[in-house]
Image (cartoon, rainbow, N blue to C red; front, side, top):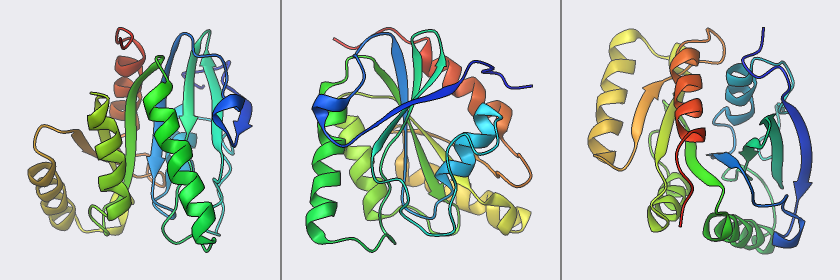
Length: 198
């Protein structure tokens, strides 16, 4: 049973003018291509293929708006890194994401998806910078935790927590074993209940 039984896709946007009305509350999800962003979203919402997964990195090339409950949304931001796209397209993605962070009053928090085996990348630093500029609380999911031995995973978690300090909260997560799904869902609900930004 999904925690969000009414969850559904609303629309995709390729420009600021195409964003859904800026009301209620929403939480953005960002992650480098191949970090497991779509799989994480599907587990948290508990609907298979809610966000499309692909063996080809970089499938999410638009800002995707999903409704969770009445006036509460989850936003899937473009991921890049492995994605083989022209420099102009990457620049457009970056501008689109910057516009999103700077303009959305309904934005309550950011989920940053990081492959636990890759540690923090330049893309992740960029997302953290965007969030910091607008004082947005951030929660990091260290995905694919099942790929590491328990000791390695514990060490990786400590390293990321040390690197981030008080910039973000961090947890283990695995879409395969569903490790950390309750913690992630609780954090999503916590973000959605936060007061609006000025």
